Length: 258
Image 1 (cartoon, one colour):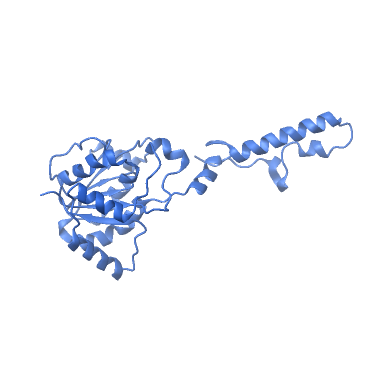
Image 2 (cartoon, one colour):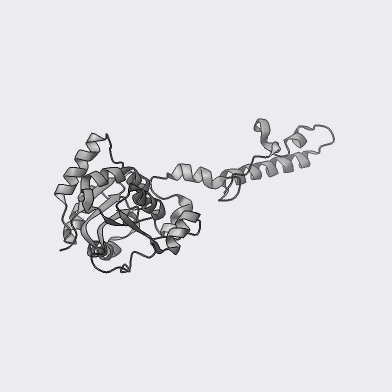
């Protein structure tokens, strides 16, 4: 949405009707008071207006933060390719903006890529709509069983999706990811202290993100019988060090169910 250009009445720090206030002649005290009140109301509306009015949503976005592990994942794709090598041959990405991740994976070559978008894509661009029409990307609620057979993919990569799920649904969703993968799971999650969802996107995600510590996740993986892929984690760390890459998100490498 384009930002509305400020009107001429706000130039030089003034507010509407300022000219009228400066007119000393022919102005009754009552009129002056009314104009002051109107100006104050306009300033309050400007400061606290919602989306679509004076660009208020832009201000809210900056305050609430816009941290994305999906963007972090896109930076990490070359590192993942080096860590997993040829075994990363058929990948399912799960998370918001999956069209961008799938497109980047496809550009890497020698990798089949598919995506699950857990949220609405009404504002998707032409490329994303094309991926959806081809069946490469699906819109699906990950709180329910995925529409794939067991071991349909070599790897499942998840970003910005699990942080918005309660443990009740995580207990169902993570085993599903393990079920449809054959060689491993890679999970990108936020860290405590990071901000994830904008206020105007909470309706999209359904709830604020829950930033969990690495120790919480490790305990949860144990409870769901998911084991860390130590070899993959070591290779990822080595590849990241060589390329001076430092993850901004927590990255977990897990074995699939066998």
